[in-house]
Image 1 (cartoon, rainbow, N blue to C red):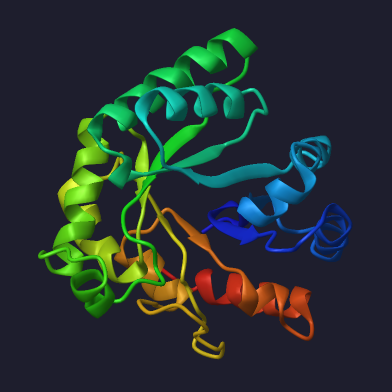
Image 2: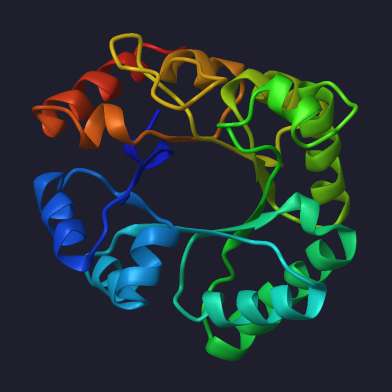
Length: 238
């Protein structure tokens, strides 16, 4: 287990707050930049992270027609990020277009292409919501698996899934398919709006490559202490 397997989200409203959080947790090597912060600060936050030799998960969850998704991916790779997300529900054509655009954009910019990963089902969605609100007839684990398999067939590097789906996806998609798990909550932390959660140790044992852990660390009275506690727990995983 390395520190690089824990990704901490910069779920803050502005650049100043983001830098304050980065300063507070110097031992964190991998940060996630999502919609709120990127909309507020633009690429400045990515440049800040790169200048500090941090790894970047740019989690903008692209979801649009294939041509637009491809253009967005070509633009995003110029920043030299490590992970980039697209919704699997954008469809196979969009996923294939995104895969090609990531390679093209990276070659043009002279940077290493990011690993492109698909969002299967948002971790805030419950089985009941999938069935009754979104009218999806499949059971949630089966639906998440179908989305991951479509992403894999389309050439993507991996998928984002809840910890409760990760074991099945690891078994079916095999070891070279990257699995990123948000919604991970230590046993001592509040579950918040995560409906399908496991502890960090359970998620790694189930087959996750990366864990996205936010509020248990960032909202803790002592974030550094919370980080150290999670790292210690994970270091016991065989």
